[in-house]
Amino acid sequence: MAHVDTSLPTRPTGAAAQLADAHAAAHPLKLYGHQPVQKGARVPRPQTPRGLVPTPAVPKSDTQSKDQKPLYESSVICEYLNDEYDDEAKHGPDLFPTGPAYGRARCRLWIDHILGKIVPGFYRFIQHTPEKEYTIEVARSNFLGHIKTLTRARMFLLDHYKPGGVGIPAEGQGGEDEVLWGRWRKWHSAIMERQSVKDTWNDDHSYIQTYKRYAEDTADAKVAQATRKGEGLPR
Image 1 (cartoon, rainbow, N blue to C red):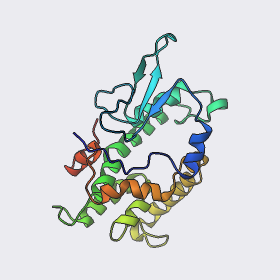
Image 2: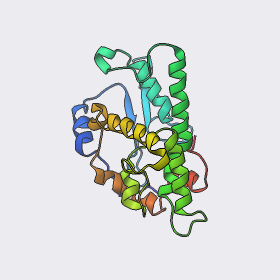
Image 3: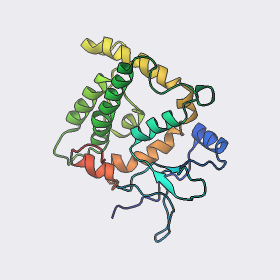
């Protein structure tokens, strides 16, 4: 049985806490995330085949029923929410580009790249310890190779925990890849200035605290177990 790390933050912080408080009222759609509980305590939530979180509890169409339908896999959850709450006047713009179906299909290809390459590469890098059979340079190079294909996310964690940081060059120091990294900086700046990102961002310390066990390679979550063996994310 996986160990439940009760040292993890149980509430959001920073701007994310303000957003959570503003949406604390009861809503038919419930979202269950990680929450440490006492041994033996029962937390009622819809069961997924693999027990994964986050898990939205979708109310059944029969309003008299208290049963809820589960969903899992982050990308599937995002697409469900995008389809279910598609009134842009109320809920903001579509997550996918409008227009020809090809544009949406291309987005899904990049989503698959993130889930299948970048995220596992992130965990393999942050879980590196000196006794690993692969060097931190190999882990960094592999990770950067996937980032060069697309993007990065919350890389300050690697700068905080790993010698030499993530290795993304400063402006003007990208060598033969400077044009590529310049395109990335433009994208990253746009993401960090996006209001939805600002509104859901926790204090940096919360992320550092959460990923400390990964940096020390002591995490026992299914993600950690899989990436430790060089596998992809559990599905």
